[in-house]
Length: 91
Figure 1 (cartoon, rainbow, N blue to C red):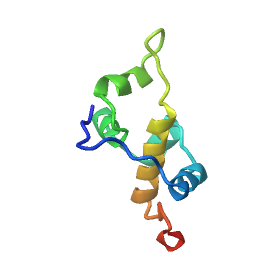
Figure 2 (cartoon, rainbow, N blue to C red):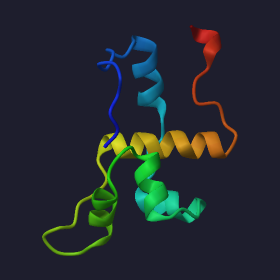
Figure 3 (cartoon, rainbow, N blue to C red):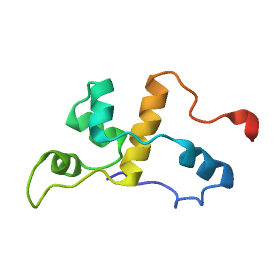
Figure 4 (cartoon, helix red, strand yellow):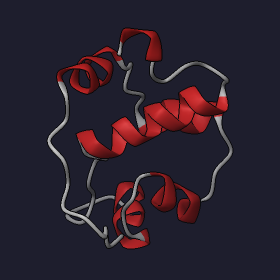
């Protein structure tokens, strides 16, 4: 888990609008576009390796990536594909 030096800020209306316009990929969609390891996924999604490993197991321990993980995947996808994440002309 990442320790942040400051408490989280409340998102602005613009930031919420940007997030709402993101197309959130599933884990399978993201992996079909990008070759990343589980450790890299944990870094991208700001979560532990154990959390990522739970996305790949079957049975009672299986978990799906949460909305916050999928937002990080969408941001990484946009950055790596060279698309704008935020249009700063609206600010």
